[in-house]
Image (cartoon, rainbow, N blue to C red; front, side):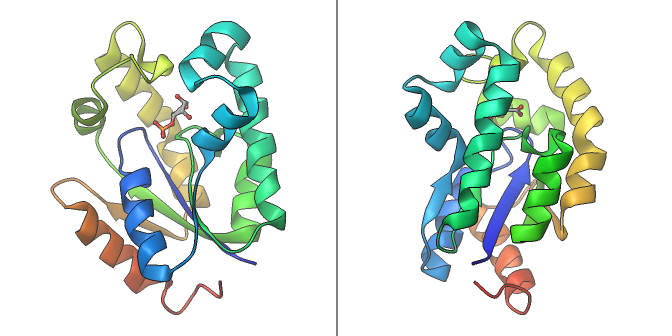
Length: 171
Ligand code: S3P
């Protein structure tokens, strides 16, 4: 078992690129946020509002660890999965990690603010810039490869990812 993990900031295209990659590689696509929502019986915004971020992170950690027993998949991770040392170690140990890079301004243009992304509540522009700056090092530290997505279509990004994992992924 070895997964292809897509990490990156909100709006970087993890789900869209993940769908294309999973089709090309003929393996399942796992959306970690969707797993968390299924398990919790509520959506991400509700989990943040009703249970708080620490509980969301704990749910996210549990959902990630469950990938250990699953068939090789493409896994679209939530943007904050890299915050935990344990998560980063797990990602590196159990698959190939691809970082999809994006600027804060482009991320905001793509996701449109806080409605579905509770961490962007308030001054979304400032939040996005601050969060991305704080995380950039962690994304790069965990990634086997970084792919800049700005100005590229999801197909182009997926093709770059495929070219990278061709020799390195034994899924
Ligand atoms: C988060 C990103 C979201 C979701 C949650 C927290 C983050 O996922 O997990 O709102 O901390 O960056 P996407 O990256 O898929 O938007």
